[in-house]
Image 1 (tube, rainbow, N blue to C red):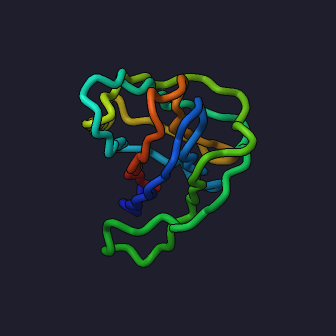
Image 2: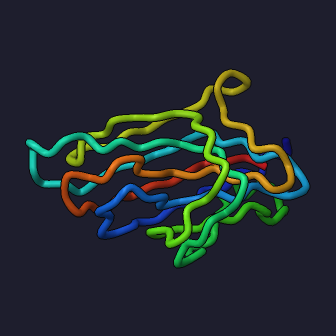
Length: 154
């Protein structure tokens, strides 16, 4: 690892169904290690049920409405450009090959920050054709906006 650290994330609005809302596309020439994942909501109803969110390994990228913003460097000590990319929004074609890494129930008035510890439970995307998606595996109780990001190292 060259400590080439990046952050990919944005806000997705109006989620009402079980759908992928973010997909990190790992670097094709080097492993991509995911260190942090954050998911938070702007819900206002205390009695709404928690949202069922999963982190999934995918074998295809699916179809998302945007790849903007592009991942940003977090550690500027290296001059190496980031290779990984990311897709955002309410996917119109779901990614395939879904193998679940984690699943969380997150109340729509809160959020969750997962942090992998070095060499223990970081998520490793092997080089070439590796995708890691964030998905609502059940429909939210009400239309919801989600802020989500992943911090990764190439």
